[in-house]
Structure formats: structure tokens, C-alpha cells
Length: 469
Figure 1 (cartoon, one colour):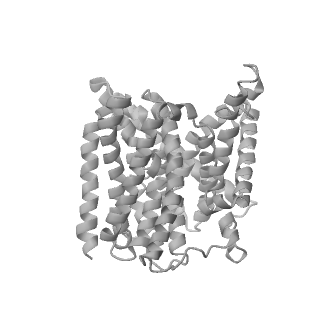
Figure 2 (cartoon, one colour):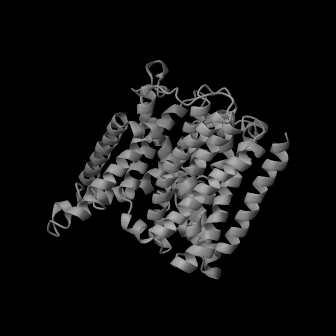
Figure 3 (cartoon, rainbow, N blue to C red):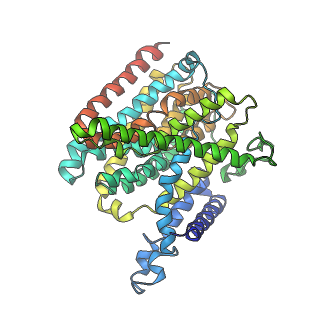
């Protein structure tokens, strides 16, 4: 693979990002779904690539024709296959860069109820998923028990986590898990927005909301995904002078340093296992661990180091957000654009069972548990956690912005504090990353028991402590 081929593949990424944005601006029903341009562009790439257009044209052209890959040269597809697993490291390395950690008391008071609710829903996805796998998917369809982890990996972790685990799925001999996870992540985002808006309309009619009384207040620019003129703020701050180093270059270097620290941590863990554990047990568990959760820890180390030496506050969180958002857009577009429709078609019934089970658990969990766990503004606060449990964090933020457009409730503050404890473990964190290799290495039953304990713990804290306040 040459540098020019990699560069040409990025030109395709740029073209489909722009095409996705243009379609979002022009198509009203996509605006009402608030779908990001990266998802729209990813679907267009999937339709015009080897999986759909290529298979159709393959019926009419020679085997060696360019058109058997749709409008994609073969080297572009090869590069795109590797991009999600690369950019997920950037996304997770950026999670804590440029942030300040508030006191534990404030985190507990504001974010505790949402943490208990999200913890229950997240671990519950493992419980219902593994039970589904043990009772139905394995005996009936011959799928491995670790298939039960796909609901949490895809719904809570999203496309990024699914892409980050591609290498793990290959290592354990279940490469189809990647395509199923990406497909489930897409279903999760779509259903998260659709079901979320249905729930908001229901809550407004039933007077469950405290702030809004209708959901018709978005401007045309907002629906098109364009910032209104009066709300346009600087995307980032110039914390260093460009004649010394370009601010974007500095922040990109910090993200790269975080990934490097994570890589060194991973290599150290693999080495320690090979010296201390492998000679006695033949365990190679650490080789299945993806890089991205360690990149997140690397980001924490880098930020703690800068907290001690950076008196000039040169690390700007908004600049980090722009890098993270750029990486996430590329990740989502290329992950959807390269998903294997053949795999989903071969496992369509298990795929639908996983999707329906996950959607029902999240929706019922929100309606039954959120009002009993979150003592005030339960709908405004809980809808964000529902959105995150169905897809990416951005889905939760979108739904919260609809029901609390001017941040008049504790929803956004509580959601942010909850993430500080939640993200390192679930929602794409360490547990999400380790669940597949753990189930593969030690079996589904031990992990199921642990998931039940964690789920019940979250439910008891939410119902008996926060729910009584």
C-alpha cells in the first residue's frame, strides 16, 4: 500500500462526507431524523461500493473489470477497511485531554442518579444478550456465546468500539462479529433517534417534561445541521502562536502521544503476561485486548502530566473536540461503507433478534427505571442516557437538547459528570473492550454472573438510594 493510494482513499472519504452533508441539507425526512452526514455518507458509500452496486454490475461485466467494486478502486476499499480501527484510538485518546476532574462529591450528587441508571441499562444489555445467546443463538443458529456481548458493544459502544474490536474478532476466529456489530450500531443510532423522538412526543402530551411543551421549535438551519448565525462561536482557542507551532499540530501531537502511551502500556501488559502467566497456563488473553481503551488511559496520563506543568493552559478542550469529532466522522463513514451485507444476510434472524431485544430492553428500562431512579427532571435527564444506550453519546446529547434547549435542568451537567465514571468502563470503555476476549477466554457463564451482579447493584443503588431522595 503506497502513500498515494492512502491519500486517494482519503479523497473518497472527503467526497462522501460532502455528499452526505448535501443530502442532509436537501432531504427533509433525514433532517427530521437528525442523522449525521457521516452516517448518510456511509450508507451512500455502502450502496455505491462492492457490496451493492458492485454485486449488481458483476452480473454484466468481466471478473477483472473495475466495476465489480462499484465506483471504488480496490485499494480504496482496502484502506477504508483499516481506518475505523485506527481512528477509534484517536477518539478514545481524546476523551480526557483538556478536561478538569471535579470533586467526587459533586460528581456523586449531580451525576449519581444518571450513573446508576446508565450502569443498570449497560450491564443489563450484557445480561439479556448473553442469555439470548445461550438459550437461542448458540443452540439454534450455532453462533458462539460471545455473540451476546454484541448488544452492549454495538449499542453502548457504537461504530467506533465495533471497529476497534475488528482485530479481536479476527483473532478469536469470529470475524463476522465485526460486521454484525457495525450493523447493530447503525440500527442502534437510527432507532435511538426515532424511538427517542417518539418518547419525547409522548412525554410532552403526558406532561412528563418540565421545560418544553412542544417539539416544533427547531429552525430550518438547525434541522439541516447548520449553526444559526447568532449561535456561531469559535470552534477552538489559539493557545499557542502559529509561528512557534500551529495550534492544531500541537493538539494533534498530544493526541498522538496519548495513543503512544496506550500502545506502550499494551505492549507491557502483553510482555508481563508472557513472562508471568503464559508459561504456567498458556494464556494469551492480553493479545486479544484492542488498543483503544489503553489509549484512553494514555490520555489520562498525558492530561495529569500537563496539569502539573502547564501553567499557561495551552491544552484547549475545544480543539481536542474538533480532532475527536473529525476522527469520529471518518470512523463512522468508513465503518458503515465497508460493512459486509453478506454476513448480515447470512445471520439475519440472529441479527434481528439481537436488535429487537436490545431496543426493547433500553426503551422499557427507560420508562420503568428512570422515573424511579432519578429524583428530579427524570425525563430530561434520563433521555440522554437512553440515547447513549442506543448509539453514541451524541445521540443522548441530541435528545437532551430537544427537551432542554437552554440547559434549564441539571440534565447536561449530570450527564457530563456521569461520563467521567461511566466511560472508562462501559459505553466503549474497558469493560466493553474486554468483554469479548473475556467471554472467549473464560466462558459466557462467569461473565453473565458478574454482569447480573453489576446490573442488580446499579438498580439497587438507583432505586433505594437516589430514588428515595
